Image (cartoon, rainbow, N blue to C red; front, side):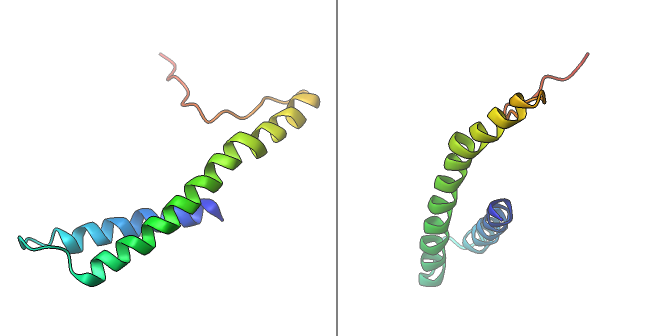
Length: 82
């Protein structure tokens, strides 16, 4: 669910940026400012949930995986094999 929200936010911020960067040298419209404020609040809440997932839930899952001899899950990028 969280990944869906983050994906939605990425698209919504892109759309908002396109609307604001529409070529006019004018301040963002009140609708654009309102949209930004709403999206920013949702982004902040989603990033807090993402941090909690990485810190708490992933750590707990890795403990269970290691207990049954499975490889833990890492969010660090893997190095490409030569």
